[in-house]
Length: 92
Image 1 (tube, rainbow, N blue to C red):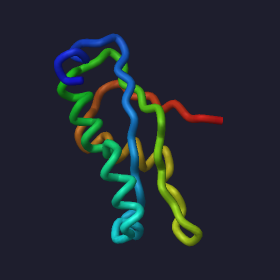
Image 2 (cartoon, rainbow, N blue to C red):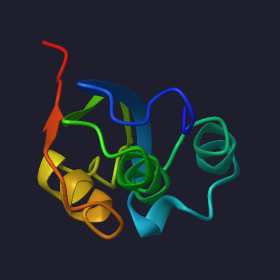
Image 3 (cartoon, rainbow, N blue to C red):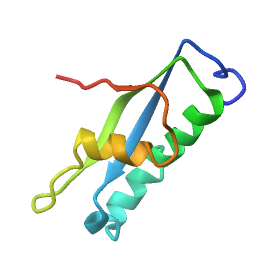
């Protein structure tokens, strides 16, 4: 990604996130370990500097008592490592 995505017009990346209350759950950790965190994706975007960065395949984890992170929280977490143009594609 870092080599071939450099300067791309559009760089699309997947992302996964869970609220801190869920991070102790083994099944949540298994899922997160197979996906990119918002901060890691932000690092990829910051390094490659695309004209537009986009998230798709959102894995926003929840359980019966803890709600999934919001899109705003996802963006805020990404902004910890990336400040450029970013859109989030959502499935409907």
